[in-house]
Length: 454
Image 1 (cartoon, helix red, strand yellow):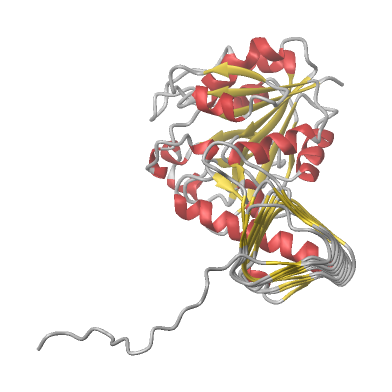
Image 2: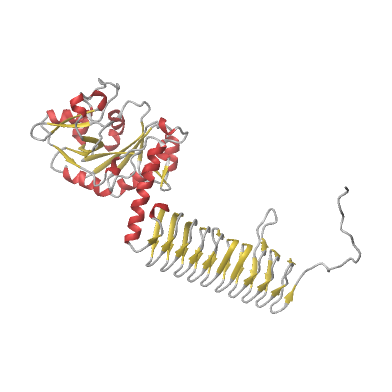
């Protein structure tokens, strides 16, 4: 069976009150449409077609690397009209599945069940039972329980509005039949639009048995119309993620105060405190502990390492049994070996820190190669940028860098060297020797401090 997927993503999203197209608003760090595309791709369809409208160029640019076709719906004339625009792109496919770019939590398993349940019939619907069905189209059945049509709430009678089974909008149809049915719908309704749901009555009148399935969770079918709904779905998504992590052996101090906006891979006995944000691709080794209010993005943290409170790690690799923070910042291409220590208000960028080396206080290390067993004193900086070019600082094994030192790159400090506190080092410092640069200290006897005039 050749399956095509049509994703409707042309809505204006007026209630978002934003210049950003609705389907580009992020949920868990990924655009709404990205979640739907991911679910569709896991079905391994022959083709995915996205129907875009408002802000179409921005939407296409955001997904330039995706393997999908793009179709424009220039006029907003309803869901039926939107699918009609996509028909040429799915011509010749056996089945067509219709999804929605602003319904991000639809599960792959639910879509597979929908497709599988309708293999013996030309049409399948995803429906749901709601305690309060207000706002949704109602599923109407005959005395034998067969679906006969869907009525939109604005067109429904009071009796029809009391029906609890609602239309989710998701459907799968035989490709050739879908073309025929869409050709028969009209805009003779309260909205003056072409409803995709009108094909249900047409199919039923032809004696087609319409298969129905329901999602495992109602959250799967909830669309985003405003920022309140977006926030509600964010918390549902994050709760799901937190539960999966805890089942896999991760300790979360408070599942309600954890956010995953990417992909997290963990080994056993990882512990994560409150208000931690994970972005991009993150790997945490066995026994890693992440302190509160920390942000980890696109990084690897080795086993036994502790990241203390309020630390930010992005694009870095940290070895085993290291200690980071509190209030540390590791920027892209910071590479820390095992048993390193990076303390409070230390920033490291594009630098290597060798085994057991330490920079514990108020330090900036940029474009540096630092050996093993090095101690970097408080207030030390590598002056790596001259306003036009960046240069490297090399520090050999076992060197000791005194507090408040400025290393003016390019410069090299030899193994075992000691740099006196308060020095500005602009020339290479030899191994196993003390190098320092200071003004002579002077005391002026009899000097009187100025006082304010009364």
